[in-house]
Image (cartoon, rainbow, N blue to C red; front, side, top):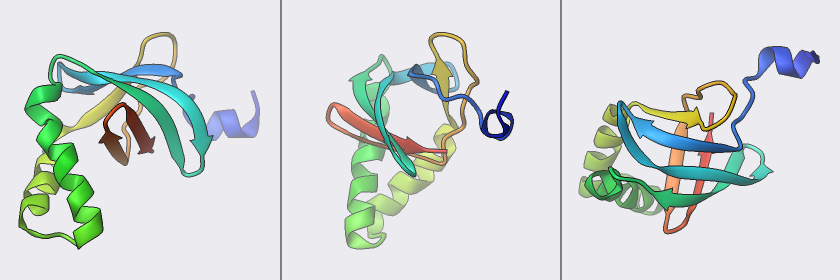
Length: 108
């Protein structure tokens, strides 16, 4: 095992984005551009109920925290997002996940 493998969790190539037991969607890694891991995104059963959170966060970045996006960030923090690999690998607690259309990216 290399030193890097000892200190950093193994990233799953394909994983479910979950909030508790709810599956928000499927992320399939397509590239890494440090610090971001870029993925294809397929909505899951819980996507409709949380999609407004991710839409609101886009506005926050562009407009420096106006009203609705503050709500979105508070809701985002409450989701407790985790990435669960579909094959072997460690569950990852991402620092941030951005989803826009069929693309996603995350940092951990």
